[in-house]
Image (cartoon, rainbow, N blue to C red; front, side, top):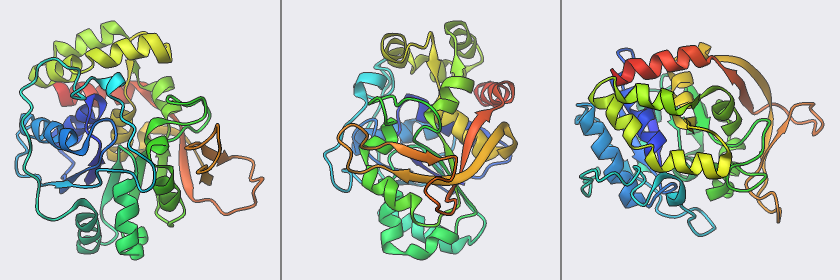
Amino acid sequence: MVIDTDTASDDAVALVMALTHPDVEVLAITVVMGNVSLEQGLANAAYTRDLCGAQHVPIHAGAAQPLVREHVSAQNVHGADGMGDIGLPLAPATAQEEPAAQALVRLAHEHPGELVLVALGPLTNLAEALRLDPSIATAYRRVVIMGGTGDHSGNITPAAEFNVYVDPEAADEVFRSGMPIEMVGWDVSRNDAALSPSDVEHLSTLGERGAFCAGIQAQLMRFCHDVTQIEGIDLPDPVTTAIAIDPSIATETVLTYVAVETSGELTRGMTVVDRLGLLGRPPNATVVVRADRSRFLQMLHGACA
């Protein structure tokens, strides 16, 4: 598995799930700007990796800016440090010399048809890797993307989910690339990966990793209450990672055509899911509709214990 992340509070939980799972070998973590700056995302990824005792997993620095637009962060959601502003000793991280896009190309060719690529942030690193070598589109076995919405409003605009909104041009290139995309939209997180305050409290009792995973959600819980109207939190990156680890956690999917809106005044960054085939274009993504909440929570609790 390779994980591309804009490491903030829910990304960190996703990393814990992957790095501690007995059946998963994480070959690399590539970091992209998104929730926070690239530098902060690198620090957060390194801290989380080390907490899991996985110092052997290399971290590669990726894009510091989107392809076209200025970077829009989600520090209002996850805190200034992306990790809930709870005072974690987050130090600048030393990344590998090899940039993220080059690492994604190299790994694809070293393990053709074998790797699962999990994309938890804006798709800039993936787009840059495809620009370097378009053939990697068919070299990854699965590309599981947390992004967009399958059947729901957005969470940064009425139409757009954050990851796609940050770099819609990159998302457009990735969805057009021929990669074997599995899209896990924010709607799946809201419907099947929301935790109540008592659920978060229970998480904090499961051990050091559980306390970490619960504690860093402090700012997210406030945002969910005030903006997305969720009492507690929702965990889009962890449920995406759970599906990447065990595809059967996705209990309902649809194979369809997904387009990314790059120019709309009100809809820029929207994922247009053509469920009825009205555009007459061949499917380019498997869109997850629902997930098994109980099995997701079982995997989450196992990672935190």
